[in-house]
Length: 277
Image 1 (tube, rainbow, N blue to C red):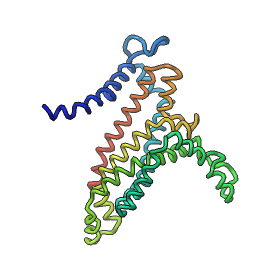
Image 2: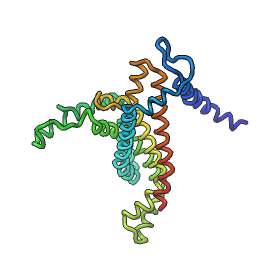
Image 3: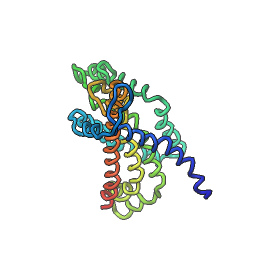
Image 4: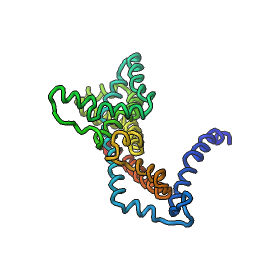
């Protein structure tokens, strides 16, 4: 009985802050809209049908998922070498590197996103530099598009990819890489056949974290994309606050969550098969 009491606080926290809110959102999404209150009486599936059949919302959902996937791939490509270098550095250098990786998390996401507007803007640092060195005479389209959003999200969520991979690499026996090389395998083959499969738990954790955070991001896409690139979180907020259509907004949020969870499940099912060959 005592062992169950130890997990009771965690169970209570999950129920209060996760399970009950989700049940409430599902309950609201199954009601019709009302003018004088958050939702009307009766039950309906019309909100879900509208989300799944409206071409504009389907396009927004696809764009949101695409931005999340590209951001995840970009952070993986950039984060794995950093994690590998950190794991094989000296203790003192590793402490400094960890501080550098964690330092951006001490700054609010709004400030970091505004910083990217200064860098990527039409009169920003990169555009002025490109004109000064004669690379272009026109404005480089680095903001108010999906490219700018991906760049900013990659910077914001890169630590969430580096740290899980770093922890997994640190747990590996350094002799594994040397054993593969001594048996005649090239560095590329050793990395692909030995290191990557063993670091897959960290890669999976980092990819899931970055993908979920990117898909649900609101501040960065709003500041970098403006109103030209609208993602589903922006539409959900507008539906809930501006239009005051709580059932429709709840259905939008749940559909996006369900699709994201399905992608994560497929990813977990496919990645072990891919690297076991």
